Image 1 (cartoon, rainbow, N blue to C red):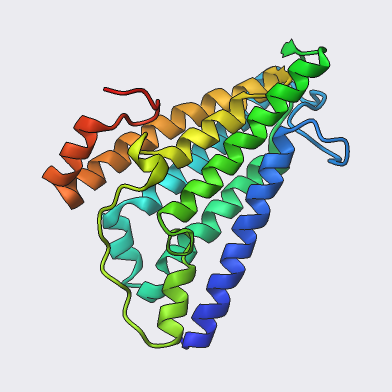
Image 2: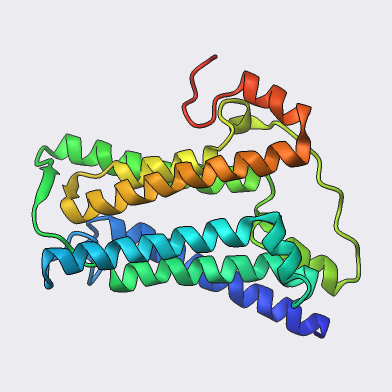
Length: 242
């Protein structure tokens, strides 16, 4: 595959994932300019809605977990260039997230609805903080490598990828997975928690912790005693001292 094609493919994959993530964040909020949000009106039977929603999260979780495993990456790079492996993961992640926004089935009813304006403002601020916290955390560990842009750029200019080093910076000194912590904050803090929103938050939270369990195994295999020591000192999600 020509380097220019790999580069364009990586940029397009990144943009698709970026649009899907922004769409998902707005989809979870009660923003007046959004034509459809997670807090919609139920249009199918309860069993159908639950089945469709579970299938969407399962698809999202399987895509993330399977494509993130080292064994799958080795297999994939026998088919596509190494430089485009991460971009492919990013592309399919964006598509899986977009499917949730497109086909999620609303459920009638609310667990809570905060009417107090101060309460609304605080919960909305927490929701926005969670997503910004998650985004900022990606830049701490190299946002461009995480989303495949560094790989396609270095391939384009014919330079090798730098060696990966284990570092503890900023939020990563408080929790081992601040990106996922931000996502959890973002999906749970809301002035209007519909049953539809709650199902999405619960199922995504379950996936996040399953995904973290798998990721921790990969990190231990990659970094050995270095990561064991990091685990001993720093909590996985909650930023409380051990």
